[in-house]
Image 1: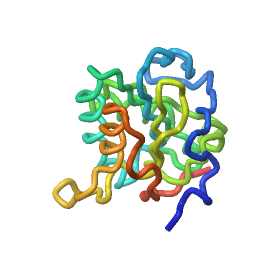
Image 2 (image 1 turned 90 degrees about the horizontal axis):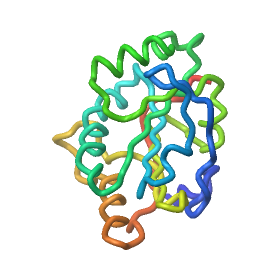
Image 3 (image 1 turned 60 degrees about the vertical axis):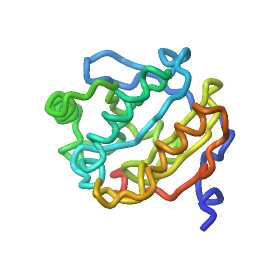
Image 4 (image 1 turned 90 degrees about the vertical axis):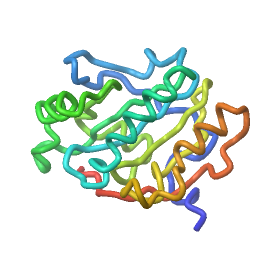
Length: 181
Protein backbone atom coordinates (compact mmCIF):
# COMPACT_ATOMS: atom_id res chain seq x y z
CA UNK A 1 0.00 0.00 0.00
CA UNK A 2 1.25 3.46 -0.86
CA UNK A 3 0.34 5.29 2.32
CA UNK A 4 1.72 8.65 1.21
CA UNK A 5 -1.53 9.57 -0.53
CA UNK A 6 -3.45 9.26 2.73
CA UNK A 7 -1.18 11.39 4.91
CA UNK A 8 -1.56 15.14 5.33
CA UNK A 9 2.17 15.67 5.75
CA UNK A 10 4.19 14.37 2.81
CA UNK A 11 7.85 13.33 2.78
CA UNK A 12 9.98 16.45 2.32
CA UNK A 13 7.43 18.74 3.97
CA UNK A 14 8.56 21.24 6.58
CA UNK A 15 7.75 20.36 10.20
CA UNK A 16 4.67 22.29 11.25
CA UNK A 17 5.69 24.74 13.92
CA UNK A 18 4.13 24.46 17.32
CA UNK A 19 4.21 26.63 20.37
CA UNK A 20 2.61 26.84 23.75
CA UNK A 21 2.40 23.08 24.37
CA UNK A 22 2.36 22.35 28.08
CA UNK A 23 5.23 20.11 29.16
CA UNK A 24 5.40 17.77 32.10
CA UNK A 25 7.61 20.32 33.86
CA UNK A 26 4.73 22.87 33.71
CA UNK A 27 6.67 24.96 31.17
CA UNK A 28 5.35 25.81 27.74
CA UNK A 29 7.29 24.34 24.85
CA UNK A 30 7.66 24.97 21.14
CA UNK A 31 9.59 23.59 18.21
CA UNK A 32 12.33 26.25 18.52
CA UNK A 33 14.33 24.63 21.40
CA UNK A 34 15.09 21.75 19.02
CA UNK A 35 16.66 23.98 16.32
CA UNK A 36 20.15 22.58 16.89
CA UNK A 37 18.97 18.97 17.02
CA UNK A 38 20.35 16.89 14.16
CA UNK A 39 17.29 14.64 13.87
CA UNK A 40 13.97 15.16 15.60
CA UNK A 41 11.45 12.41 16.29
CA UNK A 42 7.95 13.66 17.10
CA UNK A 43 5.66 10.88 18.30
CA UNK A 44 1.97 11.39 18.90
CA UNK A 45 1.14 9.26 21.87
CA UNK A 46 -1.29 8.71 24.74
CA UNK A 47 -1.35 7.24 28.22
CA UNK A 48 -3.78 4.35 27.95
CA UNK A 49 -3.30 2.88 24.49
CA UNK A 50 -1.86 -0.65 24.82
CA UNK A 51 0.26 -0.15 21.70
CA UNK A 52 1.75 3.07 23.06
CA UNK A 53 2.44 1.39 26.39
CA UNK A 54 4.19 -1.43 24.58
CA UNK A 55 6.45 1.07 22.78
CA UNK A 56 7.23 3.43 25.70
CA UNK A 57 10.38 1.59 26.74
CA UNK A 58 11.48 1.36 23.10
CA UNK A 59 11.08 5.13 22.67
CA UNK A 60 13.10 5.68 25.83
CA UNK A 61 15.83 3.39 24.44
CA UNK A 62 15.82 5.19 21.09
CA UNK A 63 16.15 8.53 22.87
CA UNK A 64 19.02 7.28 25.05
CA UNK A 65 20.84 5.37 22.31
CA UNK A 66 20.76 8.05 19.64
CA UNK A 67 21.07 11.19 21.80
CA UNK A 68 24.86 11.15 21.36
CA UNK A 69 24.25 11.37 17.59
CA UNK A 70 22.10 14.47 17.97
CA UNK A 71 18.70 12.76 17.94
CA UNK A 72 15.89 13.99 20.18
CA UNK A 73 12.53 12.37 20.85
CA UNK A 74 9.48 14.48 21.71
CA UNK A 75 6.18 12.86 22.68
CA UNK A 76 2.93 14.76 22.15
CA UNK A 77 -0.42 13.77 23.64
CA UNK A 78 -3.37 15.21 21.71
CA UNK A 79 -6.19 13.18 23.26
CA UNK A 80 -9.12 15.18 24.55
CA UNK A 81 -8.96 14.82 28.36
CA UNK A 82 -12.73 15.27 28.69
CA UNK A 83 -13.37 12.24 26.52
CA UNK A 84 -10.26 10.34 27.65
CA UNK A 85 -9.66 11.26 31.34
CA UNK A 86 -6.52 9.11 31.46
CA UNK A 87 -4.94 11.60 29.06
CA UNK A 88 -5.37 14.68 31.22
CA UNK A 89 -2.33 16.82 31.86
CA UNK A 90 -2.07 15.56 35.46
CA UNK A 91 -2.21 11.94 34.27
CA UNK A 92 0.49 12.69 31.68
CA UNK A 93 2.77 14.10 34.38
CA UNK A 94 2.10 11.03 36.52
CA UNK A 95 2.81 8.63 33.63
CA UNK A 96 6.02 10.43 32.62
CA UNK A 97 7.26 10.26 36.22
CA UNK A 98 6.25 6.63 36.59
CA UNK A 99 8.13 5.68 33.41
CA UNK A 100 11.04 8.06 34.01
CA UNK A 101 10.80 9.69 30.59
CA UNK A 102 13.99 11.55 29.73
CA UNK A 103 12.36 13.17 26.70
CA UNK A 104 9.75 15.93 26.66
CA UNK A 105 6.13 14.81 26.96
CA UNK A 106 3.89 17.63 25.78
CA UNK A 107 0.13 18.22 25.89
CA UNK A 108 -1.59 19.37 22.69
CA UNK A 109 -4.67 20.70 24.48
CA UNK A 110 -6.83 21.35 21.44
CA UNK A 111 -5.38 18.80 18.99
CA UNK A 112 -4.29 21.47 16.52
CA UNK A 113 -0.69 20.21 16.41
CA UNK A 114 -1.78 16.61 15.78
CA UNK A 115 -4.06 17.85 13.00
CA UNK A 116 -1.25 19.95 11.47
CA UNK A 117 1.02 16.90 11.40
CA UNK A 118 -1.77 14.65 10.19
CA UNK A 119 -1.38 12.17 13.05
CA UNK A 120 -3.88 9.36 12.60
CA UNK A 121 -3.21 7.14 15.60
CA UNK A 122 -1.21 6.70 18.75
CA UNK A 123 1.60 6.07 18.26
CA UNK A 124 2.38 7.87 15.00
CA UNK A 125 6.05 8.79 14.54
CA UNK A 126 7.46 11.61 12.41
CA UNK A 127 11.21 11.88 11.78
CA UNK A 128 12.66 15.21 10.65
CA UNK A 129 16.17 16.02 9.45
CA UNK A 130 18.31 19.00 10.52
CA UNK A 131 16.35 21.29 8.18
CA UNK A 132 13.13 20.02 9.78
CA UNK A 133 12.06 18.29 6.58
CA UNK A 134 10.00 15.14 7.02
CA UNK A 135 12.10 12.10 6.14
CA UNK A 136 10.04 9.27 7.69
CA UNK A 137 6.57 8.80 9.12
CA UNK A 138 4.57 5.86 10.33
CA UNK A 139 4.95 3.07 12.83
CA UNK A 140 7.74 2.56 15.33
CA UNK A 141 8.09 -1.12 14.41
CA UNK A 142 6.09 -3.87 12.76
CA UNK A 143 4.94 -5.38 16.07
CA UNK A 144 4.21 -3.98 19.50
CA UNK A 145 5.52 -7.22 21.00
CA UNK A 146 9.31 -6.78 21.30
CA UNK A 147 10.06 -10.46 20.65
CA UNK A 148 8.06 -10.37 17.41
CA UNK A 149 9.60 -7.24 15.89
CA UNK A 150 11.21 -8.07 12.55
CA UNK A 151 11.35 -4.52 11.19
CA UNK A 152 12.23 -1.65 13.55
CA UNK A 153 11.04 0.94 11.02
CA UNK A 154 11.76 4.13 12.96
CA UNK A 155 15.25 2.95 13.96
CA UNK A 156 15.99 1.84 10.41
CA UNK A 157 15.10 5.33 9.17
CA UNK A 158 17.24 6.90 11.92
CA UNK A 159 20.22 4.71 11.04
CA UNK A 160 19.87 5.49 7.33
CA UNK A 161 19.76 9.25 7.95
CA UNK A 162 22.67 9.13 10.39
CA UNK A 163 24.68 7.27 7.74
CA UNK A 164 23.89 10.00 5.21
CA UNK A 165 21.31 8.10 3.16
CA UNK A 166 17.61 8.70 2.67
CA UNK A 167 15.46 6.19 4.55
CA UNK A 168 15.01 3.05 2.49
CA UNK A 169 11.39 2.93 3.63
CA UNK A 170 10.19 6.51 4.23
CA UNK A 171 6.53 5.74 4.96
CA UNK A 172 4.77 2.98 6.86
CA UNK A 173 1.23 2.80 8.16
CA UNK A 174 1.04 3.44 11.93
CA UNK A 175 -1.13 1.25 14.09
CA UNK A 176 -2.44 1.55 17.60
CA UNK A 177 -5.34 3.52 19.00
CA UNK A 178 -7.43 6.31 17.54
CA UNK A 179 -6.72 9.83 18.63
CA UNK A 180 -9.61 10.94 20.83
CA UNK A 181 -10.60 14.30 19.39
